[in-house]
Length: 607
Image 1 (cartoon, one colour):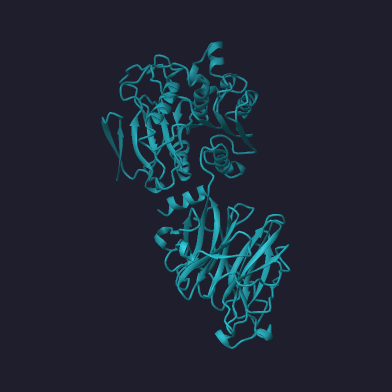
Image 2: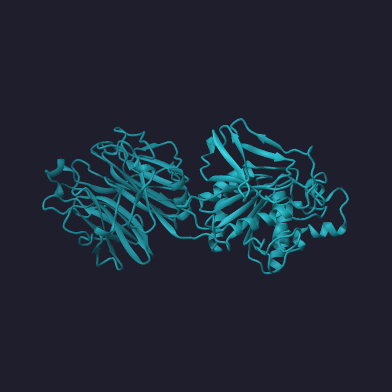
């Protein structure tokens, strides 16, 4: 049982106990529900027979409600670890007849929380002559007061008062666009706190009251069956846009049969005419009321919106980093850590595995390498066994939910193959091509560097390419440097490619990291450089470039610790091992750069 406290700012409370409320939704962020008008609701008529009609699903979730007469704010504060100080007030849709409290309320709030934005779901009064002296202004009164309340409490909730915006869906989009154009209207006695949103997001919004494009249900519910010409003009919000209207992000589907796309188009054109920052995404399909998205292109709007929020400095665009690694023999699977500076790495999921290995002879997940491709997916390969002739593969949209694991038999054509170790992937954006490469020893190959040391392993780097991870090119030799080589990791550097690699020679001892270069991903690669690591054994290099400085991390496996070197010219290297902290016991992995929002989602999910 979860107790959700509904209270006013003055601490007068009434408590609603909802059994199982949102247990399945992981809604850690909702702290309380507060009354919007603790000192009395303006423009109201007391009607004891008018009672709210909530609809609660079997799992306890409030899906919708109607006949709202007491407006409230549901507070969803972002996790303090990831909050950026921005906030958004959410206006659910429902034709001014009901409110879609889950799909266009709490689910939206949780998405904003995942990118560090605190959210406040407004359960606003629905226009009715039975409870309002003037039903036309009732929703706008609530919307103005919601912004003012959030802004008044910015210090308490650790918000930036200059980064408080709104999002509205359908009729809630009409309310949002009304607030965006009528934030200065004196519709009740208010203090001097500004009711102007700092930004506005309009989702398949009702904008106009023009009969040719309006949603007739919303129009009638708000203005009545026979509205005046003046009312039609006042609530056709495309006519109210001026140069002070907040920056706006619009989303609509072309095939919306309930609220025509012309509503968004006309509002966008008015914004453009008055020089207001605006961006509009019109999708081919999706219909009406798609919330966070249905199948089709419409489900990409959250990513587009996040980019817009970054571009307009509403949320930070700082890059963050994720480290993929294994522990022990790799039997428990994938581990993840994160860093915001590339120096201090903190484990996720309490340093427990986030993915259990399911393929290969030994069911291991060693040397996990993850990259993000042009398809927006994260692709991972790993070592599945000490002796198998293939590698593991899986993909994920978010580093949380993973596809079915596959075994890629990349070396089964070579009967003398002893192993397939340390696979990596590099994506070539120009050719839309993934190259998968790894180290293998083939009996009888390269006898000039054959040794009896270390079980006679004598590795070279092999590769295959693919565009879709369904069909693969024939396996080929990628790099033969004239010595036992393993642990190649390739990154793009301008117009060239850098291969960081390990010289595995045992006698005389090398066990160091070097660099080879090429103008093409698939080679040929140059003679390996002199060592860039020091007088210790190093393996599993992974590199990133940060502010013009290259940093290479590696596993100092004899010392059971991680090390790093850095350089601004790829020639002169400085050991910075004393400055870095990795999870205890971390082994051979890959560092990838991710958007702050991706990291925030990981921290939230694995909390």
